[in-house]
Length: 254
Image (cartoon, rainbow, N blue to C red):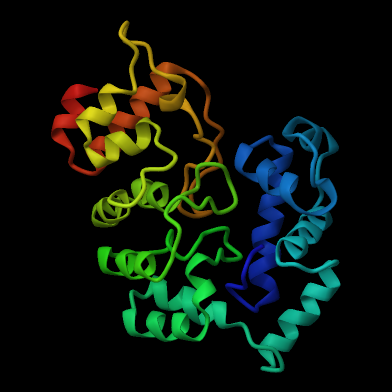
């Protein structure tokens, strides 16, 4: 269930309209969201794409993701939060994490420890939003689950940092969990032993090394894309991520 990131209607409507367009185009990330909540819950990605979700469908899905039966109920809740008739402590927590404000995060977690594992309206967990090693370590110490997937398979805290280029955060989370454990993670960590286990004796990539790659962007400013199972694509991507994190030995190995 998502926790509120913004109480502004326009924030949600713009975001969800884009989600609908990407589902119609068949992008895996959007299809996962529709399959989890709302009018298309439980359907396969191909079935959802054929059904061609509308903006209204996306609105209902967004409301369901936040725990509401209809978009109108969600709108009324947003209005109540704006008018301070309802509280949304998650908004303070997420902004404090993004601003790297350790003291405010501590205060928020003192008030509600469960927020350490909260996932925002943006589909990003608190740990995924960590901009620094210190913030990641604070959240982990307060109970954030490093293996928790946000809204898409493979969307763990370390993967967000891997794709965003936050090397210190990659290292901090990697000390606790390397989930989903694919070649992306091995390359970004510069872990030569982990890279070695990504290949069979004949040099073929293992299924685990190629797996769980639907999550690929830190925010919606990045272009929509669906990964293929191409070994060359997996290797190319790993090389780019090793370079992003200045893992020279890993680049040589790849």
